[in-house]
Image 1: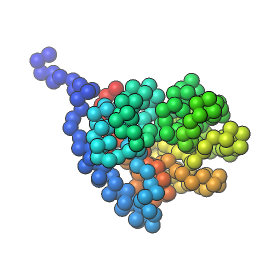
Image 2: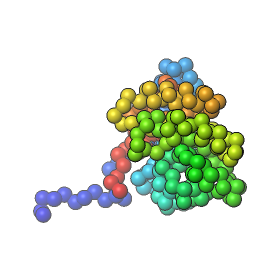
Image 3: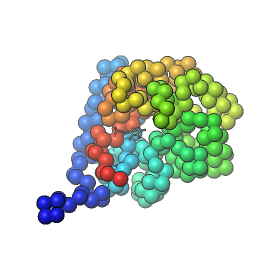
Image 4: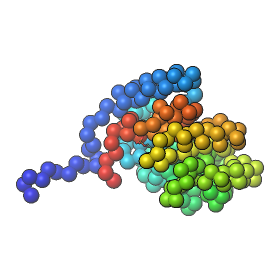
Amino acid sequence: MANVSPAPCADDPPAVDVAANLAAVAAHVQAAARAAGRDAGEITLIAVSKGHPARRIEAALAAGHRSFGENRVQEAMDKWPALRAEWPGAALHYIGALQTNKARDAVAFADAIHAIDRAKLARAVSHEMERQGRRPDCFIQVNTGAEPQKAGVPPEDLDALVTLCRDELVLPVSGLMCIPPASDDPAPHFALLRELAARHGLAQLSMGMSADYRSAIAMGATHIRVGTAVFGPRPAP
Ligand SMILES: *Cc1c(COP(=O)(O)O)cnc(C)c1O
């Protein structure tokens, strides 16, 4: 085994200049917004910190960044209480598939939930909001690619879910979210999401990741969810 190099330790990822990455992404956001005739100030960069240690998140906080995304309830609850105590202005966006039995925790810690995709979950989130007196912004996730394994409401079922969320449950629904199929050109998916949001008078569009956030901005994204381009590759879990 003499030639086997030691496995990298999950707590000790390769050095990444998070502040420089944030500045580079911000410059790309500015340029993409300008090209689309938009104001970059209406675009929120959610730095997706899933899989990264608190130390790396602190580098972003120290650089002045305040919006973050996590996709696992337990991981977020492990990492964020200490970070929030030190940086009370930090905002956490929950961006992962959400099980109904995690609605309580998600409502308790998230400032926004980008994962509402079915009636049962919407009811659970609404119940928890009432119980806890917290009202995180809600985004309805749409499965624009109709992928069977992926979270998100099928586009043809969106009308009914929006009606339930807004009229019956009075959830604070601010917009729609999508994750296009990895193999597709994302632009038509972003265009579809924009069209669906316009139809329902929803102003916010959560779309675009490291590989395609510029295209998402051209299509009207108000929230881009960028992980790798900010924090570097995620350590193996
Ligand atoms: C991980 C994740 C991202 C960020 O992906 P990158 O390619 O690292 O930018 C964005 N959105 C969701 C829902 C994710 O799970």
